[in-house]
Each structure stands twice: as structure tokens, then as C-alpha cells.
Length: 593
Ligand code: OXD
Ligand code: MN
Image (cartoon, rainbow, N blue to C red; front, side, top):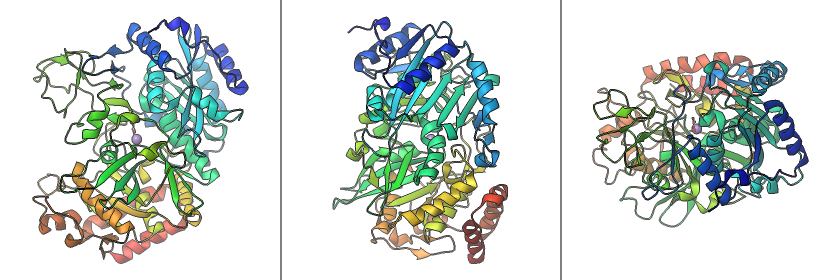
């Protein structure tokens, strides 16, 4: 195969506005070369060869891991940086109290100044991409200009990249403009900036996925959430899954969990052996775009085409489908590299290697004090590799959502599962979600923070108005999904998890789907509808005695009084913008307690 890099990327696009913008950006950044990506297989081979030649990627053992490559990040650049992430709306009030705001003109000037001449001696890649299935009315086109070949190869997996995007765009002048410059990876010059009114993103100084793959968090969540509010749809930090029962009915569930709370594992769940005839299909593992359909239901697409999953803890028990998915055509970032050209991380099925190189390239043995893989090390894999990819994942119409689940990482207070009384109570549950912080974002790990709908780092506008939008959407949805709250992470007084999680979460899903289809019982409590022991399928699950179930579902009034006070902190920050329905829901909860 011809992998002569100079022969590829030579054909500029014919889209006049995109071409003018690329030329203007090249005049500013002064690259040695402009590379126009077309998304073809031949181009892919040439890009991988170039990434290996320049030391950005290491080719892994092609017999054991065909098409797989390895990347190490700069150690100062391994997670999202919320403190450097800005919403640059014209008015500060439009970014709201939970976002960093910067005045757009001044911020753009500062960023373009940093970008000036920054691609000298480098290649500038033009990456056209489509978020969503081709032909979907919900799909959006973005063009990312980047000087990182790692970003190009990741975007190629995470989005529908290349000619397909130009085809979808046609002669429509409107597309998302994303400029990404690595600069010198100095954290002092790291800014991830969104200009929602211009449908524009400028990200400088970081090569980490969440900061640099502009289709993902930047476009598909921050910009899209702002667009969705204007256009009557929703962009959410949610996985989408199909749950098929033995009689063949399929229900679709969307679920929001903060980063590193197991969205990918849940989206790829394999039912335990007792669940004969049940199947779980993955539509997406991170992002859902949802819009009311003409039939009065809420329809969702997954805008992405790949999984950017957390490696540590992924194994054949926690996520067998992910393990199958990442055996080929996968980019591994910041995991450990074994002498045989394969990879390893803490929680892998294989025992720790006697020796390997850690995520920073240092010799590592099981005696080493530090972890071999970074806690936020990742795999980037095509969703087509997933043996349980839902056929509907590529359907332009999307899937009709029956249930929405909110969940967080809570060692106490929050029961395993309960159901909201109605839509506005469900919105209140999402709005008051809390979760322990994780390694997906730079900063302290393990502290409970409020993360409404798991969107705190991703809402591209004023969070109070975001709640209003959620409440207003009810008017456009004749048959709203039922809303649930889950917590897989409750611990007993000895600090041990009460719930086994992973595949056993199927039991919760069965109850959720049963509630949507009128075939599962529940009883009313101050928190919402909860399953009684007999409403819940415990068959084959040793240890799930009525006493354990009681502990999992317990509602402790003192803990809840504390919880409400903590919830108030966020409500106070947003007070000026908070829909009164949510204050009313709070009062109702206090009264019920
Ligand atoms: C992610 C995240 O990578 O939420 O999906 O950080
Ligand atoms: Mn995420």
C-alpha cells in the first residue's frame, strides 16, 4: 500500500466558506503544509505511518492487536481542564454562574495572537466531520483545523470523518468552526473556548481528547446544548442503550452519569446468565442528541462514531464487549506498554506484567509505587467493533426513548434505584444530582460536588436556563420518557460496596423497563416510586437478601436533610435563574420528608 505522506491530503474542499476560512487560518498560523483529510482508508494508512515516523504513535503488536497504536501524552496534559474552559457568549449572563466566561472579542484576539505563526514547520490538518448518522435531520457538520496528527486519527474514529461531512453539508454555509493548536503544551497557555453565538470553538495548548477532539465535548455538548435550546432539542451527557426482552420488545434508555462513573460499562452491559433471552444493545456511550418526533415521543441519536473509554478497570468481567471492541483498530493513550507490544492497565484481565513501560515510558514492575497506567488512560475504538452495537445506531431517525436515568457516585444517602413521580420531579432529580469527582478532570478526586444532569462541565449556557429548557421540553413531548435515579456505589458501614454493579445492573434495568411498560410494581416513598423486594428480580444473585436490599434502598431522614442543604448551595448560586418549579419540588420533598 502507498503510504507516501506527501501524496495525500492535496485536494482542497470546494465548499467556498470552509475554504476561505482555512486559507485565512493558514495565513495566520503559517503551516508548512495544509493537509485536507478525505477520510479514505488509503489516507488512514498514510496518516498512521506518518504518526509512527514522527514518534507520535507506536505501532502495537499487529498480530495480537491488528490496527492498534499507542500514544503517550505530555504528563501535564492528561485530563479535561475545567478551570481553562470558557463560554465566550456576548453577555456574561448567558454563560451563567457555573461557567467561566470571557468577553468574546478580547478572548478571540488573545487566542489568535497565541495561534499566530504557531504552525510554522508543521502540517495543518483540515478535518471535516459529521456528528450523527448521514442524512439525520439532527446531524451537524464541523470542521476542525488542527496541527495534531493524534487528534486527526482520533477524530477519524470518534466521528464520521471526511468526504461524508462535505456531502452532508452540501452548499449550506453553516458549519461549526473549530481551531485547535497544540502550541507548546504549556498549561499557562491552555484555553478551551466556545463562542456559541458564532458556532465556533478555539482550543489551544492541550492535546488531550476532551480538550482537543472538538467534535466531542466542545461541539456535541457545549455548543450543541446552546443550539438545542434555540432550536427545541436537547444535547445531553448520556449513553443510549436498547433493552430487548425475551418476548422481543425493545425499550430504549438514555442515562446520564458524570465522567468515570461507568457509562461505557453500562452502555455495553452483558446480562447475567439468569437473564435468558434478554439482550442489551449499545447505541452510544457518552452523548445523546434528543428531539421530539412527530409521534409525540422523544427520539435520540448518538452523534459519535466511536468510544473514548477509560481503560483502568476495563476487563472481561466488567465489560466483555468493550474488551472485544478494543482488540483492533484502537488507539491506546497513557496505558502501560508490555515488551511484546501489547498493553496493560490496572484492573486488566492479565496479571501485572513482570516488567513493562509505564504511561510515561519509565520502566515499571509490580513493585513500583506508582500505577503503570494513568487513572484517566483511554482507548479510542470504532463503535462498529462492538458486537452488540444496536442496528439503530446508524439510523438517521434515531431511537425513541422510554426511560431516562440519572446517576452519580454516592457512597451513602442515595438508594440503588427510584422513579420520579413525573417529569418535573424527574428534572428536579437531575438538577440536584451529586457525585464524587474523578480523574477525568484535573483536580481533587473523591469529593461530592453537584453535577446537574452530569452536565456541569458541559452546559454551554446558563445552567438555570438549561433547567428551564428541560421543563419546557415537556410541552413538546406528548409521551415523555419515565425518569429514574440510580446509585451503583452505595457502601455499608465497613466501606464495602453493597451492590455488585456491572452485569448485575441488568436487574435495575429490568425494573426500569418494566415500569415503563406497566409490568413492574413499586411503592410510593418521599423520594419517589421504589421497588419492593418482591418487585425486583433477585433470582441467582447470592447475597441479595431482603436485609441487604433494605440497606441499598434505605432512606435515612438525617442524611436527606443534609443532602437538601447541600443541594441548596447550587440552587443559591443559580437563584436568580432558577425555575420556580424546582423550588416547588424542593418544598414538596421537604414536606414529604
Ligand atoms: C469523557 C468525559 O471523556 O466525560 O467522556 O470526560
Ligand atoms: Mn463523558
